[in-house]
Picture 1 (cartoon, rainbow, N blue to C red):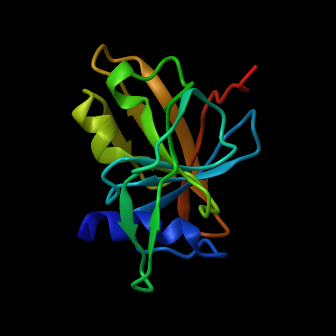
Picture 2 (tube, rainbow, N blue to C red):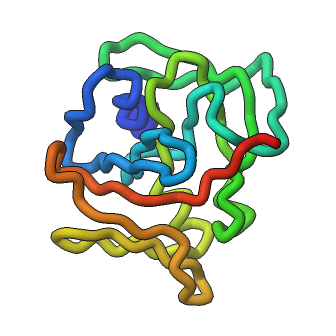
Length: 152
């Protein structure tokens, strides 16, 4: 639960986060997401394009920085097809302002995240680059471009 509390900084209205949290922007869907090293899973907002969207009445309960909680209402799979299959499942929350992508989940699926001063690269187990990005000068956080697809 303590690690999940770090993940929920995305429910705030600003993008000022601890050094463990990184901002990500999706290229084709104008959705800002956070590439998060402290998040235990991918946590998305309702409306984020996913496949296999399933209602979950017993969703996971996540603690927020203000000591409140929120519960996911759905599960789904990221449509980022170049990510390993085991790195695509996610939880959706109605009160999320920005989706969170979990660096631990990506690494557990065989990916490596390389953070440099001005850019970030996520590489899968075959060495293929699956996410790249740069540092947002306004927030000093990392941004990545993802090939988010629509639900159509």
